[in-house]
Length: 99
Image 1 (spheres, helix red, strand yellow):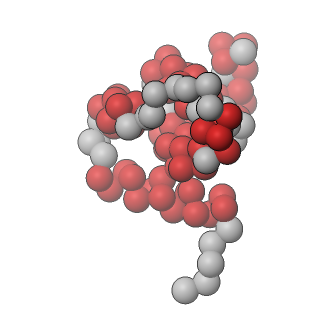
Image 2 (image 1 turned 90 degrees about the horizontal axis):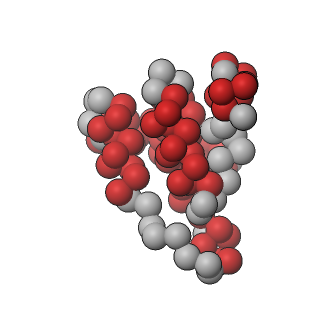
């Protein structure tokens, strides 16, 4: 098997999450929110936050129809790691509301 690049890896993991999370997006988001580590002031946390990229991608591809819940989730994720890719569809679809 050929090694996947970073974005391809987190996209694959995100798709696999869909197989195991509840079918209802709000219910799935609740499970993911409970999986987040507490926020700390440890700068290393952000460095190792790449494990959250699949979670952010899950919100990115599934969350546009659930704006408030998704933005709240992205807000929590961004306390721990970047959501620079995941926020883009929200900016494109609902720029003023997102900003």
